Image 1 (tube, rainbow, N blue to C red):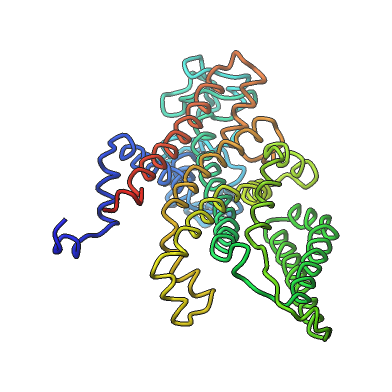
Image 2 (cartoon, rainbow, N blue to C red):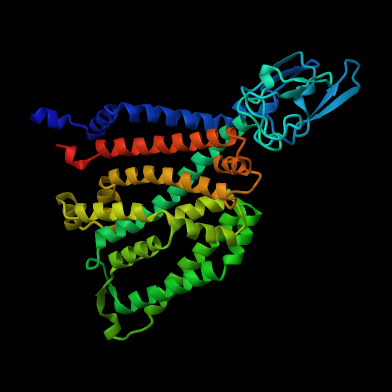
Length: 442
């Protein structure tokens, strides 16, 4: 490579060009963008309320309004005609002057009492028109992918389930990434013989960590469970309080260590951070992950946020291993040694110089982790121990199909959605791994 080409070389452009050579992965990337758009627009793609309606001279936008909204309809003489309560109004029976329905005119929780008992996509479907007559369902109001046992539309459930699946993958792996990158960076950069600390301070830090975990998470486990039972905000507040208890315990014991003036205990000793992190990874990996998640979800209240937090807390080990391996390699390179020789703090050297150059393989691990998180959530929902019953996910739809194997559409379509999504993430991750291979930089 010539000197001019080296100066103009951009590894980001090179990696993108390498990625684009994998046509299957490029198609998967576009499909992923389509899933994201589908998830964002889900309330307007599948909704039992019209997007726009001209009703008795009133211009209404029911799909964009809150469920608790009510509109008063007045006659031309000013007298009250009727009150539309958005959450209970049967919009399909109203006589509109003009109406624009969502592509799928059903919400995932809408129970169509005229099409219960597992109506197939091609089977006979009934419809109650605005005159109160029960007729064959018109094409606009057919359940294109069929219904479940209580008349809920499968297509609406699949579309809204996309939001849950993508959110589970992103949030849970966001939590896992924070934990894994932080611990892996510390383990890889410091190792077992690079960080020194007075012996008394080291011992008291470990004691503070023990008491912080015991009182912050062990003693307060019921407060945490009750908090998440009352809502995500209440649960996050309790979680922050537990973390605060942990931090305060460590700070308190580190402060107490200063009061002990024993010369022998003031000698500096190496802190084996790499050993602690590596043994923690091995301990967590020795426990079957799905069994651990099932055990925790059996203790606390069922919540989608609880599921995401548990998957995140138990899924950081792979990310930590990749980060540790990259930091072990990078810490011996010239730019890191130059930063240390200039007197930069360890924090600045790690997070500003070393870590940004070590994240490429980590992003690949995160992509695989998102696919794994979606699969775990689907498995939990399939077993009926994941999210609450009022939240529709792909796994819960599969569970409904398990209860009635003749309803093949409840097995095929959710199964295809899970398979396609997992395949998309895996193909993108594999192509990214090939494009970001450091050995190809030259």
